[in-house]
Amino acid sequence: MRLRFAPSPSGQLHVGNARTALFNWLLAHGQDGTFVLRIEDTDTERSSRESESSILDDLRWLGLDWDEGPDIGGQHGPYRQSERLHLYASYANELIGAGHAYYCFCPPAKLESERKEDLAAGRPPKYRGTCRGLPLIVARGRLEAGERPVVRFKVPEAVEVTFNDLVRGEVTFNTGVIGDPVLVRSDGRPAYNFAVVVDDAVMEITHVIRGEDHISNTPRQLLLYRALGFTPPEFAHLALVMGPDHTPLSKRHGATSVAEFRLRGYLPEALVNYLALLGWSPGSGSEESGTPVDELLPIDELARRFAIGDVGHSAGIFDPDKLAWMNRHYMKVAAPGRISVESLRYFIARGFIRRRTDEALEFVASLLPMAVGSVDRLEEIPERVAFIFEFDPAASLRQAHVARLLEEPGAREVIKALPDAVDGTLADREAFRAAAARVRERTGCKGKALFHPIRLALTGSDGGPELDLAVPAIERGAALPPQAGVARIVGCRQRAEMFARAIS
Ligand code: GLU
Image 1: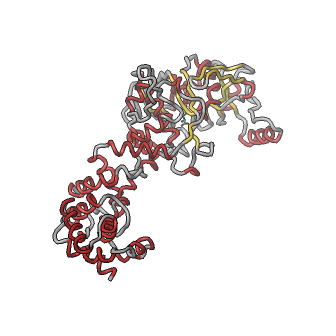
Image 2 (image 1 turned 90 degrees about the vertical axis):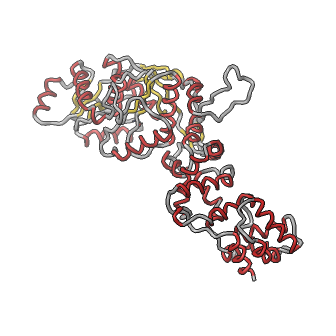
Image 3 (image 1 turned 45 degrees about the vertical axis):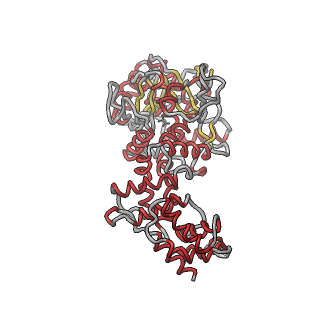
C-alpha cells in the first residue's frame, strides 16, 4: 500500500489538511504501507519555500513522519512538482499524439467573455471546444510561428464516470457537464488535475485519501488515468472539518493552523488524537466490546485500529472544549521534564524566566504540580503560578474582592502578626504550618479565618494553588542566585512585611 500527502505550500498547514495527512499516515502505518510526502508547488505565485518548510516542520512536530519526501528523497523522486516538469511535458505530448489532448489557442479574453455569457445564461461555465477539431499539423505550425497555446484534455462526450469512494460509496458523474480542462498552461506549468494524475501513477500510489473539496476533480482524473493507460488508485474523500456553525473551519472560528495550536501550547499527541477522532471512531474492538469506547489513544494504537471504511460521511465539527480536555490529559501524563522544557518559552515571554538554564528548568519543573491539571494549555501555566514572580500588595489591595477580605473578622490581625511569625524560610510544609500555628496562637484565628489572610499576604491573591505547595515554591525561588536566569522572587518574610505595611 502506498499513500501520499500532497500539500500545496501556499500558507500554513491547516488542521483540516493535517487531519488528511494523519488519516493517510494512520492507514499506511496500520497496514505496513509507505507514506509519501509530495509538494505540489506548480502554482508559482502562491507557493514558497518558507511555507514548504513550515509544513514539513508541523508534520514532524505532529509525529507524521514520511518514508519518501523532498528532504529525504526516495525511489520515486523528485518529490516537488516544480522538479518534475519534464515528466508532465512528456505525458502531455503522449496524450496529444494519441489524440486525447490538443493545443488550444483561444485568447484568454475570448474565454472570459464566454464564461460570463454562460454565467449570465445561468449555465455552469464550460469551454466551447473551439480548438478541439484543429488539425495537429495546423497547431504545430502555429506553435512554430511562436504562439503559446495551452494543452487541453479531450473529455469524452456524455460518458458516465463511476467510482467507488471508500468513504462515500458509489459516486457517478456525467462528462456532459465537464468542459475540456487545461492540462498544461501556456507557460508550460501543469494544471493540478494533470500533475496529480501523472505523479500518483508514476509514484505508484495505491490509495488517495484527500479532502472532499477534490471530489469533483476525481472524474477528470479518472478519465486521464484511462487516457494514459494507468490503473487508477482507490479514492477516499474526507468530509471537511467544520466550525460550530457548520461552515468549513476558517479564521472566523479562531485558530485554524497547526502552527497556531502549537503556539498556544497544545501538545502534538493531543492534536493528533483529537483530529483522528474527528469523523472516525475507533470502536471498542471485538474482544473489548461492551466496554465504553476509550478515546484517549496514542498514535500507534490509532494506526492499529484505523480502517478507512469506518470514517463517517458527515462533517466533523471542531470542538475546542474536547481538544482542551485531551490536552489536559496529555499534559498530565507527559514526563514532567518535557513539560518544563515545552513551557519554558511561555515563562520567558512573561518575563518570569530570563534565560534557559538547568536551574531555571528545574525550578519550572518544581512548579508544575501546582499548574498541570488546572490548565488546558502550556501557555496558561505561567499565569497559574504568576503569584510567585509578581508580588505587589498595593496592586492587590486595589482589587475590590481582595479589599473586602480585609474586613473579615481577624483578617488584619492575622496579617499584622505574620511577619514576626515567619522567623526563617518557610522551606517546606512543616515550616509553613509552624508559622501559621504561631499566628493562630497570637490572634486566636483558625481555619479559613487564619489561612485566607495568610494566603493574601503571601501571594497577593485570594485564590490559587495549595499553600503547602505555593509557600515552599516561593522560598525556593527566592533562594535562587541571579545566574539561575530566573526573575528576582521576593521571599515570604519580606512579603509578609510588605503586606502588613501596605494595610497599616
Ligand atoms: N495539492 C492539493 C491540495 O493541497 C492536493 C490534493 C490531492 O490530494 O489530490 O489540496
